[in-house]
Amino acid sequence: MSRTTVLKTYKLWVGGAFVRSESGRAYPVRNAQGEFWANAPQASRKDLRDAVQAARSAQPSWAKRTAYNRGQILYRVAEMLETRRAALRDELCAVLGVLPSDADAEIDASIDRWVYYAGWSDKFGAVLSAVNPVAMPMHTFTVPEPMGVVGIACPPEAPLASLSSLLAPAIVSGNTVVALLPEDAPTVGLAFAEVLATADLPAGVVNLLSGSPRELLPHLAAHVGVDALNLCGVTEPERAPLEQAAAETITRLHHSPRLTPDEWHSDIAQGLHWLEPYLEFKTVWHPLGW
Image (cartoon, rainbow, N blue to C red):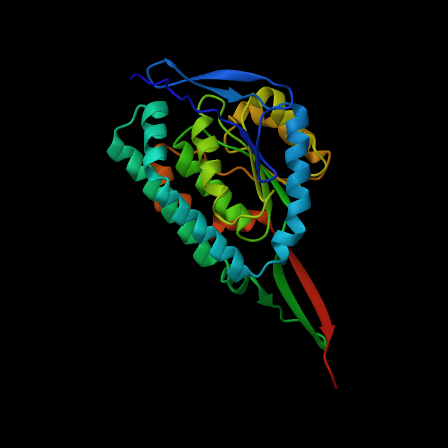
């Protein structure tokens, strides 16, 4: 007996829940052959506000967790990525038109990226902090702290590896993220949300939206609840008005390099310098005892 094909319904990932756009809108996503692949939810300005609110609410408790515990959760993301390998391989092959071996290489790079930053979770503080020499009877220490809520515009190149390379260094220190997925290939990121749903990651730490960058990015850049903005997926000529909007709310701007797929798979796309831009440094002065 023939069966009805069960097509997948992709949803936004906001506040630890899979939700449809409040506007009810969706747009067609095509595979590498130009054929219809799926309908992706088209997030609205209201969805963006909900995502920022969820990230803002989750940030204090996420930052208060021990660095070791945050590392455990990032490692759990890597574990769940491994168990979802087959589904993500099919997604990458269909959307990008790559061979299964190339899809596996991207999944491997993504898993390795989460493991890499899980290892840094309780070490970057020691590397980046300092005891400062001062010419007075004082102790002075400089320690890193998370920025808060980070907005990320994701690039279309290597959509799983680039997403992992941008998310992991942002959240490992205690930040939360609102990420706008690439408009033409959002389903890889939306499928990745199913990994996060089973990875012990607290609700609101990562929020994933799909839709039109032209509609959403100006509001993300100007939102007073966003503390840092990474426009990695935005071309150089399009960044200026977004940077100007972000400056109105004193948002930190940091644009990760837009790499090729092979570079996203390599060690170029990881390191302490990918983590540091999402940190603030607090210096404490304390008088010496007599």
